[in-house]
Image (tube, rainbow, N blue to C red; front, side):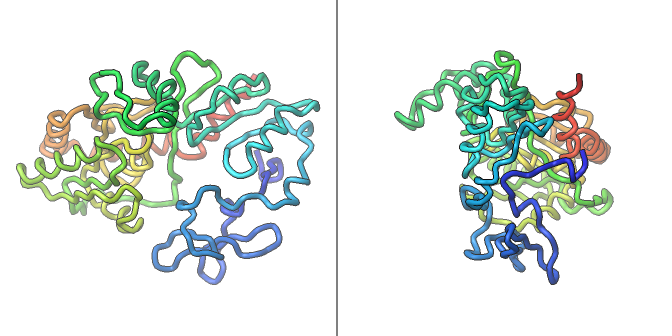
Length: 356
């Protein structure tokens, strides 16, 4: 689209980081330093408090003058709304209620906000992209209709019994598959930052790194420990805390890159970064078979290995290792990721809906 053809409103410094004296930083529109890199961990933090960006709700809210300088939306061909925190609900309401000619609106709901219907019903909204669109109707009905009520009334509402009900994680709200034609899946992903994996110097047969954000992750953790001990596998198996503190990112990346197989399991949400990080960093993806819609997803047995119970997990791990299929699956998985799942590919899929 070209940099000069896109207007970012309100301005978000996090999207405009640059290197200053060897440190990654970002400033507001007045030139004040607001984000800086932690030299020890490499994470981005608020310059004025030192807190990690991911630990605070609402990243760098807009300044007052930005709200006053509301752009003339009739001058644009497309509006993309991609953030619900801070002042964004106010801005979105202003756009939807505008009496001026309004271009098509695309809504990107990366957090699976539970008020999807409020925005979805607006005629000005062309498409509503959600991070997680479940493919299994029983689970979908539960999380879309019952979970909001449960959060208000009780934390112990019984789940209707499906084959996987006891393993269901605690996701954000999801959209009913097939009932809302405006809704399209838009899975999270990671950027291609130039990492180049090698396949001849693997240290671990398998790795599993996760935090305690779902019962399923705990179950898989203990299962993998038994599998590794039983078959004398070289394994790195780590279960962190509920709040995500643990292995520094660079070490985490290197562990995955040095693994033949690496396991991904849903946590607080059905879609996880690890699902995409594993193939990108050159390990064979071994994942719980996804409950969500993923366009151009990996294929079981070709560029990934999917399982739905502990016995199947053990079978897939042993097959990939003993047959040496792990390397070809890892290579093909990375190629598949780069072909279909980079941020650039996600952007192209969004803009494709504007074609006549």
